[in-house]
Image 1 (cartoon, rainbow, N blue to C red):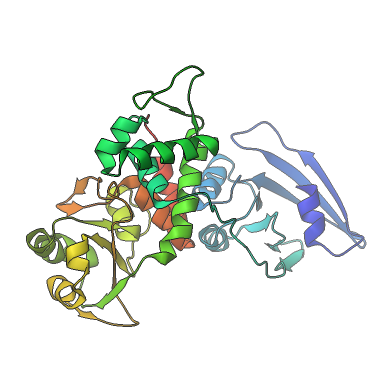
Image 2 (cartoon, rainbow, N blue to C red):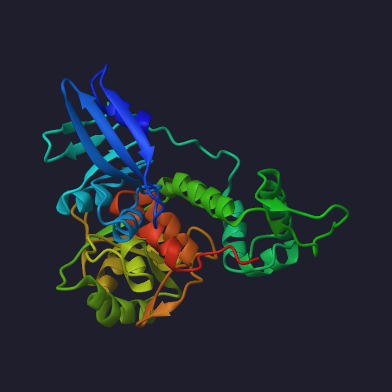
Length: 340
């Protein structure tokens, strides 16, 4: 915390940090010596920096004046601004305005983030991972039966997941019926979501514009019934799905859908089914084919078919921003797997 404060201040400013009293969350007393003056404030640590982390901190320690975190999300910064709290994060950004006259406003230089491309992941690996996330035993026979991919592809996908350190098989167990176990649930989900995000841009997308008063009502009473009549399978993902499954955001800008290959192959018919028209930009609906045979295995909520919760999570992560915050909330609220 001291280093983060120093990084946000001009060179030569002295900073002293001492632990605060034992409380519901980590707090610190910070003293900044600037010229002949001193500025005192209570600081608190909000972990990763999601809005839920910040709200939890302030609820437990209301007298915190400045919130520190690894990297505060846009939603967390907006919440803090609305509630008149300052913030500093380890990325180098800061916004602090105290009644003592201390002002700190710093925006770190733009950082180019290059995602590490998980080149070893394949679509059959995603299918196997989604099967495991859905609770299918991690055996060749079970994955083959659940996903419809070949026995050889199932065996290869599980072996690759094992080589990545995501699955483990006890020494001496071999054969297509032998099960591997998930080494670390969080690492498995993180690895799957990262791979899904990298492969997602390669998918073709049909963009459709249509009018509605409420997108969720349109899904339940208009688009859903029409899809039931005209599609072999379909499912909602993204923000709309997250609102139905684990409400966090309130507005849906774009409804994201998956449909079967047959309906996707005829975009104009697809647009007619959804009550809209195909466009190049200004879309209200984005439609893709299912990334894997397991992506459709989600629940039905209010008559609306949802994608596999793990797939919804991965799609939210891929979009980022406020959708990323919804992904974090979904992961905290719903069991998105793995379950084996």
